[in-house]
Length: 223
Length: 109
Image (tube, each protein chain N blue to C red):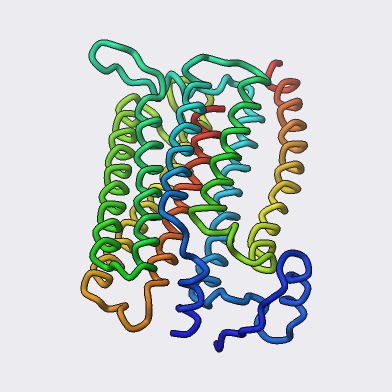
């Protein structure tokens, strides 16, 4: 794809000229990045379906829904704190998004050591997140929560919980593998010739995982 | 190579921008946690949850994912389709309401 150089119009006029330009509508956006965005768009629909499904079962159940604030409370040092593990998980994921953004920035500045190390830190934080999720699952399973029932209330709680957080956790785990792979290639210098756009593309996936968590946190844990 | 160098120019932003957004995301997350901690109930709770959620999502998409620096032809193509979900959500909410009403009638016998 040769990059067109006469991209002068912006805003609505730019929208019209881009889409009417016969060849590629997305100027200045490489195929790699476009395809990652389109994949993320399809993933958005998958998670939307899960959340809408969760909404449906929660709205239709005649049995009271378990209170997430109490289900996910922890007792630390003799003090009962609601939802604390989920809050820590949220902060860990946001921090990892921050280090990822820094890595993308360093990549474009061609500081490949820094970019690679920041990506490895991001992957480590992702691993911490998955670890805490495993702890949370263990705790709930020990308390008797199953996909088909639980001692706290509506039976659909377990199915929604394991489905939604499980699928998100899978995304985080895959993201960690993806990050480590690209980070090692960055550190080895594989992208010196081609440039470091790959770091931005990897970053898009990682930020998306954080983005999905924002919605899960709001609708499943806080609502 | 050429497209990469163009993109590298387009997506070069001062690192301070990222730090500010990072900080803001921390503050917003603390606020949404406080909604639960302070035990807000009803419409106030739901409004606050949604406001903080959309602010966080917007910041991540706009700054971390660089959408605010992309051309309109691109960000409209990506951000408009998910709005279809709202139609789906509306339909399912109506359906769920109906199911719930039926369960109240038949399960209470």
